[in-house]
Amino acid sequence: MASALSLFLTASLASAHTVAGVRQSARLTFLAPLPTRLERPTHRPVQRATALHAEEPDEKAFAEAMPPIFRVGLELEPYWESVDPINLEAAPITLPLTGGQKLLVRKAYVDIAKIIMDRQKNLNRKTPSYPNYFNVLLRGSPGVGKSWFLLFFLAVLKGEMHRGKNFKIWFVDNSKRSSSVDQQVYELSKDGFVRLRDPLETLFQLQKTQPLDSSQRDWLLIDGLEGALFGIWRGSVLLAASSRKDNYNDFKKELTLNLLMPTWTEDEVAAALEGTEWFDQMDDKRLYAGGIIRDYLTPLSQLKADVDSVIESVKYDDIRRWGGEVPRGVPADNVPQSLLMSLDPTTNGTYTFGKVVWRSPYILGTFIRNLTQQQLSNELDIIMDPRKIAGQQGALLEGLVNEFLRVTKRPISLEPLNHHMERVNKTSQASRMQTQQDKLNGVIRVSLDTTQQDNKPRVFIRSRIKTRPFANVREPGFWVPAAKNWAVIDSLYIDSAEDVVYLIQVTANSEHSASGFDQSLITNLRTSPAIGDGKKTWRIVWAIPQGGSIKPLWSKDPTTREDIKDRLLFQEYVFELPPGRALEEISADPTGTPQRGAKGLFRRFLQDVFSRLKRN
Image (cartoon, rainbow, N blue to C red; front, side, top):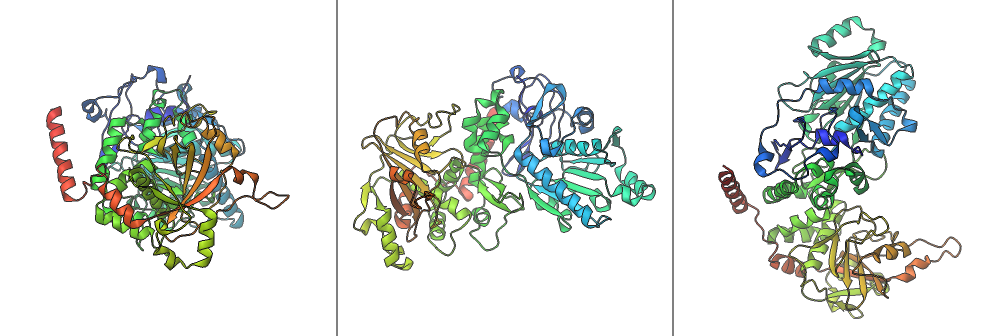
């Protein structure tokens, strides 16, 4: 069975990768040569998954140089000639490529293409002649698949041609960021395909001979660095580039649309890798790759090493700036460490406004475990400041709560929700911030027994059996999710001795939605061997900053206007993260050995030197 992501197998498996922001070369063993570049539009018919070597290469093979530079034109031509025109109103689920292979068509591809085409058509109706420019910037994290969108968009434009539109397309491959900028240029039209040997001169000649109204209908698609051609192009321009300011420094000065390619969902990754050897490794890699599809084709050992290296060397101030903890944040450009964080659009459906997200809860936890005591204190100060907690600080709060619950050896205090709401109505926030839950009356004490766990948190990964989503949660104890798109809960504690299941939802939102806490969640949780079918007490724990407040929003019965009956299935408690105790216990955790700063970097340098000497 052909892979749902054959292009992915060709373009990315042998792609270069980055370590601490430095481009590295890489190679996997295939039956046929592979291209050398990241995210390039690749159309070579590849071997089916069963023909690939299943084992990961050793370090020496992985580090060897790639074959000579891959020539896009030799592969783009058969793709353009064979690809079916696409109608966006009936877009396919997969896009057939040469060699019987297919490219997965993401929902985001269709949505973004519709936004671009609708905006262009509306602009044309309002202004009979084009404005000076129609420039579209499509940004995103490295490895998220922006080049594949360009392939999809080519098929969309081919559909426009087949519906009678008369225009041509120039495709520019500037992805290698080398001296060949604006040299890999190809002209695509209904009549065929040609490589332009001197694109700048050709463009000047076209401006002299081609009517203005004709040239304004043309499209320029650029993959990677902006180059110079867009500055004299008369028609529409689409630049797909990773989020680095120097990729589009001049291009962004005159933008019609500024769009973001979202990271991949868990289901999209599974659909893309199904039928390939990498499907079996998907769960282990999700902890590090998150929603960056290309990294699922990096050997797991290399992926782990890259993340560890970045965490040791990343600038703490960069992370704080990215998380919005300092006034001058950098939400879109100059990604400091793409192996830790990704750029995603907000959830309003327009693919425009960006936010920085941690790749996975596991990576966030790893970062927290490597903070020095002073840095950890700084983060706790931010979390406890009610004026500042918002956006990515909510994710940071989640990471800190999970780390604290993982390492604490003393009982924690849980306050019944009704008691908490009564207290909020009677006392000020300033007063509550000075009062620890341990000192309150009416709270319950809960001991989290994590003594039998490993030195890192257990991670629950969605089972591939759709009817048993929690089948991988096999033992009692404390668990965190592998992916952030797990519904409802941020962590889970199973107390087998008391038959109590704690469903932990971390929030800084005082009116957090309780959507998802229902009978279907309980049914899914019972698919865990550690929970089973016996009688259980289900406790929702709303984890908030000390001094915060929570009044969860439950759906109402449309007839009675009362809370839905599902609410009666759960007991609700509030946990306030105690900053002083969190600092003490997370810092004292022997697994969180901070190695950051000069000593950590020097030790990493020595490790790399000895590793290279050993290989040689």
